[in-house]
Image (cartoon, rainbow, N blue to C red; front, top):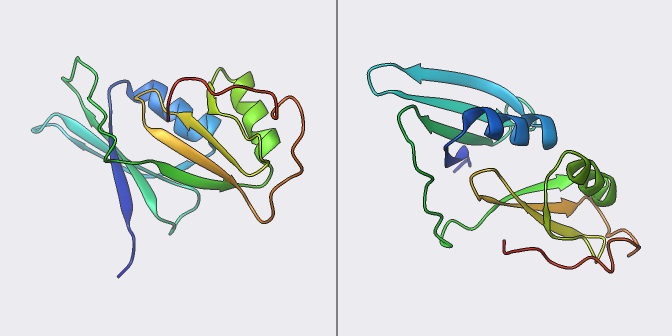
Length: 139
């Protein structure tokens, strides 16, 4: 068995592509537009051949999607969790669960999908401002 992808429905395709590609650094590996069905499938990954995130964009959807807790989250490892979180903050992304432990943080996509960020290798030494940063919302 081989893991292929996870699918999330997105309401604002441009905001989602900014979040996943510009903020998180994923690359678009392929895209298919289905005129008759009025939807697009956009596949993103950390590199070609890696498991993908499939963004499903329904062209006529006007209301946000309900997010069930049963979905869980997407998870990505990062080289430096503190630098990554600071870059995300500088880009306007809220850190819902700061990396107080030097190991794990949570953020949300524009559609409310929880994204877990994990430090590659060993946890970094806990440091400010992260140690004192409070949780924001849920994840």
